[in-house]
Image (cartoon, rainbow, N blue to C red; front, side, top):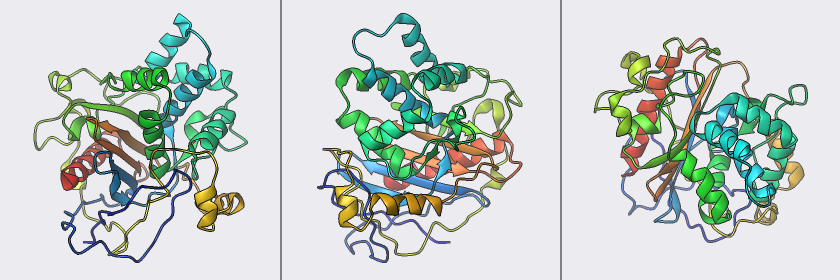
Length: 345
């Protein structure tokens, strides 16, 4: 079994395109990272950023692109709030609340259309410096859940929210994410990953796609949802449990891989690609890399993202095995998020 590398990096430069140094090893003084198992058949990309230490402390396939599912709703909300001047109409405030807390799709579609669909993604990518994120395919402009994202880019989004966005934007979005409901408005249980594997306090935005429009078991709010963490040994949501035998080990990337995110997740964000160009990553080069990093639109996806306490930003994006059930996928992702959290504590 291979292990992820806990990256020991400095984050002194402005945010732009991330610079990667592959083949470097972690300093000898660093504590040996605990193994984090990624379930067989699952493609995972993750980032854990320690705001207190000012560095990325765990990473895997940070540039791998996934379809966003509902994670893009964070970008929709930020874009709306930053473009809106003055008071937010009550009807729009209700749309934002149900979209972020209950992951309501109709609310997202209304705001997506009003914001110009893919133009929302383009504006946010320029402002925050997202290098892997792209609008849905041209043939499906209304499919906001087909937006391409990466773990690194979503970590940048949270970094932007916490450290750079206007207080009214930060407080509105983070306030809703801190009150994420266990039962989404479509009846799916969205307490998987961080909510089930990590103790409160946390603020989360979850994402899922490829499991149909009706949950196999309708969500019922459980007593443990008030604490946000399942009892030890319970990996998945109580209403959609699955066998833990699915949790078989796979590799976590090349041994000794260290990722230098000096130009990656940091304060003083800029929309230009100065640091990226210094590393040879021009705008054209970035587009070329995206073309060679195709998004899988066929297999189901399940994502857990958010802020744990005031210290950690955690983003775990996964493509699940073809035909996987929602329950088994939730179990796998919860175990991964739980183990990842424990490994960096």
